[in-house]
Length: 298
Image: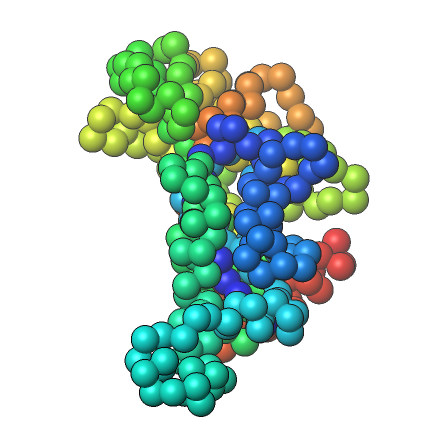
């Protein structure tokens, strides 16, 4: 059985998503909770690994259960009406509706293990559609980055999800710079290099605006992101907003294809994964195969 998990977390006190020995991570925390409920050694496959300090409101993962875990998932105390109907009813195997209900109830059971006011929550658990792969079936990932400049002011209640910049930012110039980067390109200048990993990505959306509280907010969506890419793109746009770079410079830097000290990679605290996009259910398997083949070719 494959289960989809919809997840949100405050990344402030996590050392990123991926399980690491001796460190508190999102993956490790959720897997440990599932182990207490279902036993075994559950392993989550996630749509996009986030770095230390990065938050998520729309993270997605999947989990494959073996037969023993499925049996524990479906096990329950007989309901009152079953007990009244007799032992045969109480011991009856659950039907498909009961199985789906057991899957849906897993989110609440995880919440019970994590306790009151946790910094991570599995907001929904559901039976995954045929062909669903949280990582390879995804068509896009969307992030938000929040900045408080001198016009916004400092709000201590927002400090864990907003980066402070001590300047008055030209948001219109930042927006123009961001939009000029959209498209299929090699983003090596905006990625932390990894051996044998491609830096070619399709940037689908990138814009800046002020919200109702005058916070400067970026929305950025791509088919996938390479390591530190969003925070580097944000840093380049902030350099434009401060007047240290011209909007055209971000394209020139991209086309040069090498990392540069012309801008800073901004802090993780302002970054939130807000959405993972997937195709229609009947296209999930084909999308996963296409993505795997492309990664193998790369």
